[in-house]
Length: 128
Image 1 (spheres, rainbow, N blue to C red):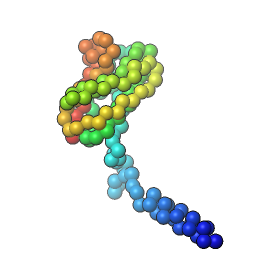
Image 2: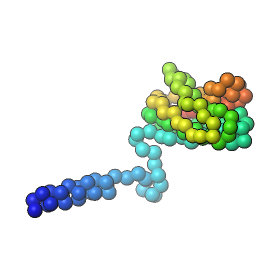
Image 3: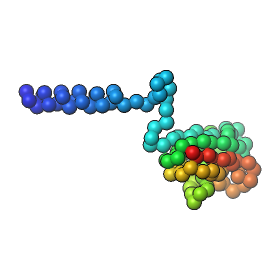
């Protein structure tokens, strides 16, 4: 009986702790979690050498860029600047992600497949 009561108390405490946590603002909208941000980036699905945006913004900390490439042309994403230079896997018809720990500042992101950056697959990532 004592074990059952202890278990019930533990379950109540856990449920209370989970219920008190929040993942939204006071208007019920989703907010970025402290662990970091996930940014969406897509390559042109028709095979053009282009991303769907040339600007990305994130808060400092762990930043994940999730790249979607629905085309048969290989693409990846590289982040460079302020001592950082990291590249995702190169993919075709798939999704990959790259997580980097970033300080406030300006970074470049681009496709590191030869010739793609030169063709315009690049942009600016601003971290605040």
